[in-house]
Structure formats: structure tokens, C-alpha cells
Image 1 (cartoon, rainbow, N blue to C red):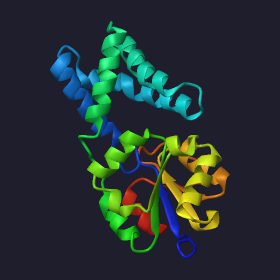
Image 2 (cartoon, one colour):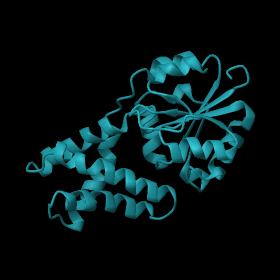
Image 3 (cartoon, helix red, strand yellow):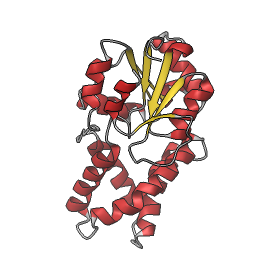
Length: 228
């Protein structure tokens, strides 16, 4: 496979950038400063699956950006039986976005594998995250120099798994589908989205969930060396 691949497209959150770890640290700062009675670990336990469900709705245009920001917090506090005003939710949402990019932990092996791939391929990012936030993550995590192009859903006008965002990214990168591969943690948005758009794909399955046998997958980023 590696003999025909020229361009590699990475997802950012949950693939290179350790969203869960960085997110928990941002919430911990907010709660310790303003809501010391809230135990961060208890909140995160409720928040993680709720946030994932909200993002899935957002990816398929079932909710707006504003609803995503509100719902994931409101539903999490409801799950904790914690009453909170809409004004406080808005304040937390704003603080969270500000603090999220101050911690920039990457997945184990991220820099090593990018160093390995960069001399051999042209590297790119396709992300559904919000442009300003994603740009800060990439810059603060010192990832900018590895990537030739960065496509986000705001630029493309649609989100993964919509094939239009892949076409947009390919056009921006001046890459051919048959010479390109997508690497990401979401079977729906990254893997099936890429395959349906005509690209090859590798599933970054660090949580080791059950996946179709016909899909290429890795549990650690350094396993990419087996494929590329």
C-alpha cells in the first residue's frame, strides 16, 4: 500500500491531540476556581458519552454549533442532578474554549510517527472542530510544521462523514483519491466517510472497540509503520 500513497490525512481530536485528557484538565481548572463543590471526575464520567452523542448529532447537522455547546453541558449537569443556570452554562462554555488549548497533550507516539512519515509523504489534517480552536491546538501543540494543508468543516461548509469535505481537502492538497489515505478515531466520520469518498482509511482504535474485520486498524499510532 505504501508504494502508491502520497498523501496522508489525519483527524486531529482523539487521533493526534488527546482531547479527553486536555478537556478534563480544562474543566478541572474551571470547577476548582468557580464551582469547588463539583468533583471533576464525576462530571467527566457523565460528560464524555454525552459530548460524543452531541458531536454525532452535530456531524450529521441534527443540532447547531450553539446547541452543541449548550446541550453537552446542560445534559451533563442534569445527569449529575446539579441545578445550574443558563448564564453559568454560557460562562463555563466560554471559559472551556479559552482553556482547552492551553493544555496540549498528544497521544503517545504522535510526534515520533509524524517525524517518521513527513519525509515520505505529504501530511494533512481534516477536522470537524471549530476553525479558531483547532488552529490554536495545532499551533500550541507545535504540530504546524508537519502539515501541508489543514481542512476544517467551517472552511468546507460540511462535516465528516460528508464526502464534500474530503473532496475539498483533496482539492486543497492537490492530491488524488487513489493516492490518499485517512487516519482517524471515528468509524463513522473518519473511516466510513473516507471510504465512501473514495479514499483508503485506517481506524485509530485506541479504545479497542469491536470493528469490522475488513477495516485496517491500529491501537497505537506507531503501528502506522506497518502500513506506511
